Structures are given as C-alpha cells and as structure tokens.
Image (cartoon, rainbow, N blue to C red; front, side, top):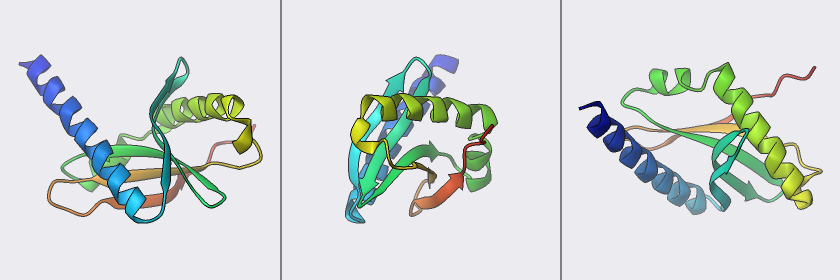
Length: 123
C-alpha cells in the first residue's frame, strides 16, 4: 500500500513540475533545467528571465502550510549545495546571485509563487 501511495505522489509531483514550467513560461521565464541532480542534492527547476536566475522548489500539496513546512532548513541546504554545483558547471551564471523561490501547486487552484522564499546563510 505504501508503494502505491508513493508512486501516486511521484506522479503528482511530475505533473506539478510540468504545470509549473507552463506557468513560468507564460510569464516570460526560460526554464534552463528540470530536476537538476547532483550528489549534493536536487533542484526541481532552474529558470531565467533577464538577469534573474531562479532556483525553484516545486511543492504539490493539498494545503499551503504543509507545502511551505516541507521546505525546511535541511532541504534548503541541499538545494543550495546543488545550486553551487550548477553555478560551477555553468560559468555564464557565475556573476549572478541566484534567487531561491518556492512554487506551491494545490488541486484546482492557481499556483502560488513565492519569490525569494529564503536566502542562504553566509558564514
């Protein structure tokens, strides 16, 4: 039973990312990467518009609060490490400070897009 729920959740996540891509493109964003994976972590979407580079975590949940809670500090650090790997592999973006955004998709609702959802901690 758990496996079936996990598969269903995975499918909903893939559909949510596809919807997020369409939504972003409708607002002039260019999606550079989907599901960017490195050892350090994974980034759901990497998109650019003008000089802005957005690192976007996509969350598909029934309620908004649980979606935001699921992007905790540990998840943020993994995304930040994956972002560092992306930037080192793409020197054309090396002078840009990436913005960390969260897009929440809920059934039968418009996406909710949180710009600058968090900022990396600096040592």
